[in-house]
Image 1: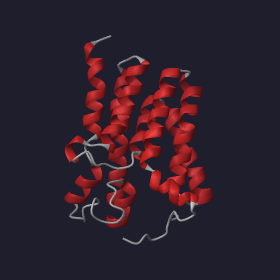
Image 2 (image 1 turned 30 degrees about the vertical axis):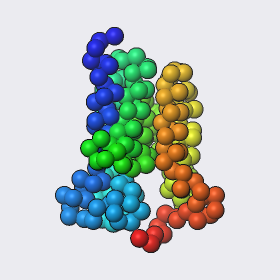
Image 3 (image 1 turned 60 degrees about the vertical axis):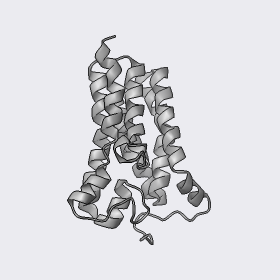
Image 4 (image 1 turned 180 degrees about the vertical axis):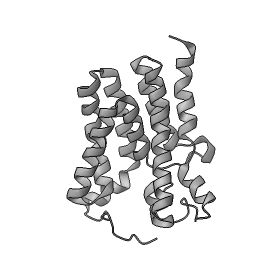
Length: 200
């Protein structure tokens, strides 16, 4: 295996560590998402504090952080383990960014980007699941968690790689851990629905 392949997860982590929410808010002279709204540096909170344009940019960049490194690993024909570790590293970078005190977002967009990097079909199925749950229950976090729950299954049907399935499951577990408070609110039926205004 080329030595370059071993560097891919490191590059992915560094790319994931670039916090789009913080940078976008700073450039657009918006409140710091870490100290406003939910305090989470992610697209949902940027939407809350800065509007649709800022949120869309944040969402796109966060997704690309997972997509580009994982796709590069796949295009370089790296071993499934390297591709999977690259995807995990990108998500870890978003969750624990080295450039921002290891305090990052919840990793949904970056995870979806990584899934698209593994296979466009996996990413498409994950997005379709998110849309289906969003339209049915109108709870963004629930839709994201459902997508992450089914993602390893989608990876298996698409790639037949047990290694990639395990890596996908690791990503899902990481995102679930970061959504602990959301899960509690969902169980208590206190999670805000899409379109609701959340008090800051």
